[in-house]
Amino acid sequence: MRLFIAMPLPEEIEEHLGKVIFALKQKRGKVKWVAPKNIHLTVKFLGEVDEDQVDKITPLLTEVALKFKVIKTSSDRVGAFPNLSHPKIIWAGLNGETARMTEIAEAIEDALEPLGFEKENRRFKAHLTLGRIKDGRDLNELTDYIKSYDFTPAAFDMDRIVLFKSTLTPRGPIYERLFEAVLPE
Image (cartoon, rainbow, N blue to C red; front, side, top):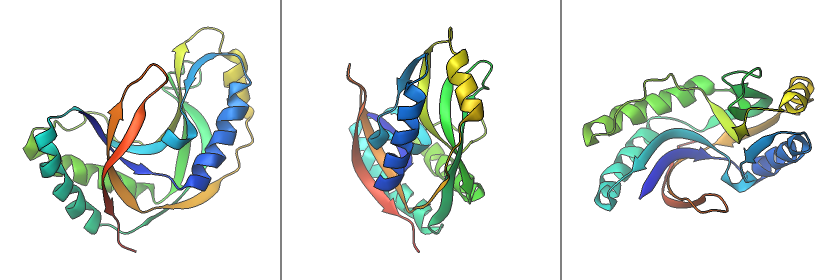
C-alpha cells in the first residue's frame, strides 16, 4: 500500500482553495492541479508499506496527537517551490501556529523511525500543494499572475492527523482515510 500521513482541511477551506486553483488555471502553463478535495498538509510520505505495518503506525499517531492541541491557522498566500523563477510546485502558504505543525511533523518522524521509516533530510515547510509543474516552459503568464494575486486569507483549525492510502490512477490519485487521530481541544 502507498501511504502518507497528513492533516486534512475543513471542506470550506478546500472550496476556498478550489476557487484559487480555478483562477490560476486560467493562465497559460502546463500544471497538474490538485483536486480541491485532495488538498491537505502532508506531514510525512511513507511510500509503499506492508499492510501489517498499519497496526504498528496507528497507535503511534494517537500518541503523537495526544501531545498537541488543535492548531489555529490560516491560508495566507500563493507561491512556488523552489521559487517563482523556476517553479516546480505551486502552493498556498499557512500562517498562525506553523511551529506546532513542525513539532507534530518532527514527533511523527521520531515515532516512526524505530519502525524503519527514515527521517526526512529536508526541513519541514508547512504548505498546501495546489499544483505541480509538468513543463517549465511558457510559465511567465502564470508566475506573473501569482506575484500579483490578491489572496484572501481564510482562517481554520487543523484538528486531526490522518493515515491515508493513496491509489494512483490515470485520472489522479484516490485517497482513502485508513485512520484518524484527533488532537485534543
